Length: 533
Image (tube, rainbow, N blue to C red):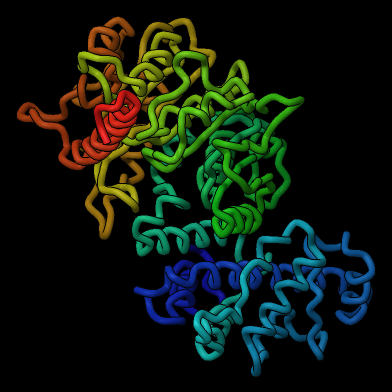
């Protein structure tokens, strides 16, 4: 990180130290709902100070600048109703100088900021810093004071740190929370290297509309914007067609970002993440599967690109949820992939959300690529997968390394869809087995930058390489009973005869759940026949 104002520490180190100031690194993830809004507010305060200073240069004093901003909120991006006793003091000092009933004071200030800025309502005012559980403060004033003081040591204004730098640091903090978040981490965070690969392969272009139906903290959407700017800034483009650094004038339109998130706290996190990255998007709250918010003229709205990492193997959707759908997301006869896993239900939603030229990338459990293949009987999940293969909608499948994700050690796959496959790619699917492209990390493995670029370039170019990638005809997939797992077709070592244990365990969980579902259905039938209790 480039900015070291206030101390010799990098912005990332500072931001993590601030988080740890409450109760140390081990407990920091428990307090993310307090820490993230405070750092976000510090950024708002310091940027507001910069805007006031700009106005003051024109009108002669900070006092007049405060008065003008209060009279006309359009003079600043976000108007903050925080006025220090001495107008020359930083706006953040109003919060920093709280000495009594600090939790109550912080909550009051956050809510007043939200009242003045509709865009921030429900985002920074949803946390009660004075909240108690069984009569005990969740975050007492002493620890809250320590946190405020730690955050105060570094300035986050326009001249101190660029939006993309503080944005990346904010992402770093979210990742650190994910590392300590256990099973809940996967609800809001996708490993950055996975998101980078997805966004580079999808090749979003300026002005495109990008959608994530399960957006979590918004990381995949932000990665798409980065990928677009990176490609548009390429030296290979003619002079005058390059995108400048974020915050400078650009000749290319930014992406239009849209997302929906079910968990309220995570929805707020996504909105803060967008704003702090200096990106404007529309993030809706609600259950996408049962009530998708993005619609147009009574139908599902469609987009140029769709990215998602839905929770794997969700088992709380029933056949009725599919049958009752009025948005044509689930084709008759193939719509219900079985109650034990909604993975292919999410793929169907994403497919229905693409326009005629649209492309998508979705992270799935590895079992979604193969479950049901080779079974003597029918399998609902395989039936849906077969529909996508037979309609030639699958462009490529990427098999990831183990132990990347924060809520499982299973490897996972990335499924790439294309509703407008080029003629030379029709009737074929490109498979990449990147299970060996990783470096050991603590607590999780990671894909180094060289590996990210290798995987992305391989997928973009459909480049075949021994023990890494293969172009497979649809006929071969059909011959293998619609198993589309790259590990089935590409062996990464001569001695490899077994699938990864973690993959098998995850698949067994879903198979067992399906068996229980079948047993329950059979029990009900036997009860109706009077031969079982």
